[in-house]
Structure formats: C-alpha cells, structure tokens
Amino acid sequence: MLRGALSGLTRGLRSALLVAVVALPVQAQDAGLGESRGNVLVIDSEDAFARSPFGQAMAEEVDRESRALATENRRIEAELTEEEQALTARRPTMEPDAFRELADAFDEKVRRIREEQDAKTRAIGQIGEEARREFLVAAQPVLQQIMADFNVPVILELRSVFLVDEAANITDELVRRLNEAAGAPGEAAPDDTPGDPAPQTGRD
View (tube, one colour):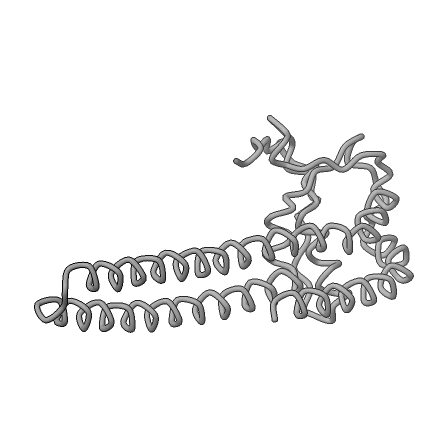
C-alpha cells in the first residue's frame, strides 16, 4: 500500500512541478528574487520535505501504517499469550517429551512472528527514506529555477554546513514554490529586508 501511495504521489508531484516551473521566472521577477544573496545557497531538505504537500501526505500514510501495525502487534501478542497459557495448563497432563516438543514449536512460532513483524517495521522506515529521496529528485526543477533566479551556482545541504548567514537559507522559498506547484497555500519566504547578519549553524 505504501509503495503504491509513494509512486502515485511522486508522479503527481513531478507533473505539478513541471507545469509550475514554466511560470516561475515571472514569479521570481515579480518578487525581486533575481538579486544574488552570495555565491552559495543552502536548504534544510528534511524541513522542506516535512512541510511540503508530498512530505505531509507521506507522513500521514506512514502514520496510518504504523498505527495499523501497532494494532496488529497487540492482537498477535494477545493471541500468543492465550496460546502460551493454554499450553502451560496442559503441562501437568502431558509426558515431558511431548510437552517439550509443543513448547519448542511454540517458541519457534513466536520467533518467526517476531521476525515478520520486525520486517514490517523496517519496511515502513525504508519507505520513509525512499520518499525523501524521491522528493529531492522531484524537486530538482524548482531548485534549478531557484539557482537561476538567485544567480548562484551551488545549493548546499544546511546540515553539512558549519556556519551560514540566514539570508542564504532558501528553505522557506523552496517550500513556498512547492506548495504553489501543488496548489496548496504558499508559505511566506524569508524577509529580505537588509539588517544585521544572522548566522546559524548546520543542524544535526
């Protein structure tokens, strides 16, 4: 279910961005974004993903799958507890070897189920990581347009930068354009009013 949702969301995001990029130069010119903020810009890709329509939709889907898995785990745990209690109640009436055989089979069943449920948990986490990669690929047209609008050759990941002027952080601008491309309400871009530099460190 999650992989199908990811594929559909990715196709929709890419289509919306390809259409939106055609209009971006005019939007950038109106907003006065063609002025350079230096030779390098930075983005917080995790923040952009979390605030984008694509990221929010995936987060909701992952949350639904996680809650469904938690409910399934509780049901399985209750069933196994009941089965264990029933097996324990039979022990006084069974030969030791026969009971040991059933107990070993029960232990193997518990081990197998635990591995299956752990695999489901890992799959949900992997889909989240895959969604982030797909998001960055789909957002490339917008990032390329931002590079052209701001007249810079490089956009770096904020988490890999030790110190940066806040004016170089265009995460809000990226989120605004992604929201516009998806038809969602745009978020305000950072205030470009000149003032004292506000350095920030890369986030862990």
